[in-house]
Image (cartoon, rainbow, N blue to C red):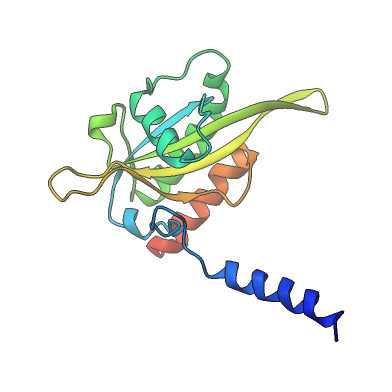
Length: 174
């Protein structure tokens, strides 16, 4: 009987922790593109975020992206080119999206955070995280927020392929 008490106590603690909300009361953001279904103007941004605040990582990334220069610099131009080529192919085929060149023209931002460049078979590949950030609107009181992120860190081309696949599904394009 004494051996069952610690096991019961551990199970009780585990199950009580599962249903807890984050401390700030906000639920975790849903990973869905439904908010961008009817939005047509997207800005592609590629750089290495210098986010150090892990307590509110998404907020810090949003602030970093909103302040960033949308024009890629240095070796990020190559990753930007790979992703832009795939997005432009999608734009030409379905015409449900258009590219914005400035943040004020965009409805949302597609941000690829380059974590590192990996060498595979003597070729460098940009590897990182992909986010879709809705700019928000002061009129409705909605702040900018991350509405979608890639399921894991990926090579840039694979990450943008995942996003395009999700957009096609969402918009009923085949």
